[in-house]
Image (tube, rainbow, N blue to C red; front, side):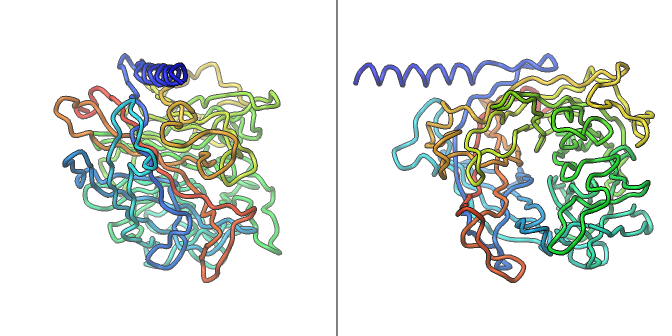
Length: 488
């Protein structure tokens, strides 16, 4: 038994050493000190409208409310669900933002939580829900805009519109601004929307033409999710622009509040996005946010997504699912595989990592011919030689079983409630509030549970997820050192 304890202690020490190894990027040493807290919201949680809570496609911590007392941190955050529970097709789920009260009692670095308290370090409580509307005050919907395009009006560009006439939103990332208003990015457009503090659409920013989905020469925002009896879009995939269900998945404001960065989930159709093996060259759009109503594209860069081999040796691309901006030339980027984890058939994820992206040496392609739909930047995934991509540096391996095991979690079989679920799509930072550690932060990471529950209710009807799936919303909290972030 002594030898076993010694082995466990040695493993924990090795894991801590690995976590504390700096990741050097942009001449700055960033350090992950490891997991310090885990918590859950149950899968059958209902919001104030009586509908099943929608987990985290995006997340933003209210840093102004963040406090520390007697070893416990308290504050609130906003979580963004996506378009609703996926049945055959999509549903008329009203777009919304949820407010979550958070209490974090972090576990000392390298220490083990008390028995039975492994996942009690984060207490998350749903406290409010805000519906999002269009600029006229009408509800937005998660329905696939199979045939609809809302014509330009005033400063508004053409927008995705469902067959019922509502603005169609598949929300993916949220930035909360000091005045309470918010930027929200979506998949359908893919657009960036500015909403007021009470949820009313104020303005919309359309990306360069190269990202707008086109079918037969016109903008068509369908994502190929037709309901019963409805026809597929023609063609099923856009000819150019963002792929189906691969929009502006990640978005963040720089610490100085001057720039908004948005990243496409993976490459456009013309840049290799017509194949799962060649979609690695995606784009980061950097907007000047001086005028919140009129974002101005300042820079644009190619970001090479990680490539890995699946269990059959096939090349796969880990699509990005969220970012946190460190400056106007660097950000954290969460990337992952798909089809593996609790709630789906595959059990072991092969790739879930947070990387540091350095844009400082990359080619700025904003306003170049590559911003047009008819000028591919990376045909069949081969990057044009005139373009230097951003640099990626590994930072955190979310699948690290040594770290997960301390909190009763794992990656892989058995595919139970302690196996990480498939989709990790939300990140946000909050200070450790320690004068001795001015560069230390808590990095909150959360999953998107796809509304998977056996006790669901949405759009006026109960439902049960297939195969008995019950997937909680889960929070993982890492302590990280990000030098100089507070000064930027």
